[in-house]
Amino acid sequence: MPTCDSCGNDYDKFFQVITQGKTFTFDSLECAIHKLAPTCANCGIRIVGHGLESGDQMFCCDHCATKAGVTNLRDRS
Figure 1 (cartoon, rainbow, N blue to C red):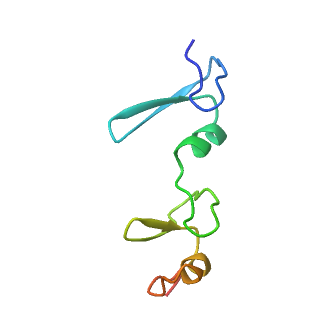
Figure 2: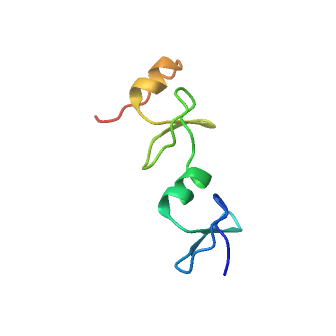
Figure 3: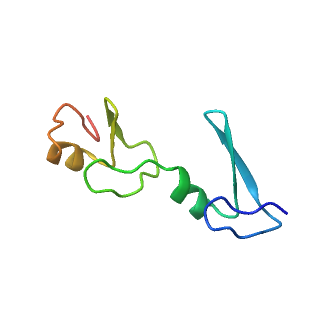
């Protein structure tokens, strides 16, 4: 049985995610998020969802983007 790439658990209901040519094995969505989700460049929280992007930086919300000096992004129009 494969082991989770985040926590090392060997679980019979594992799943795999293929991204950018690499395959990862997980036992839960929580572990997949912990391993693969980008972090906000301002507050460090894991971004679950679309987030906001400016250049090579990702932000969880417009507030964090603005705090980091990025003012051209908006959560909504």
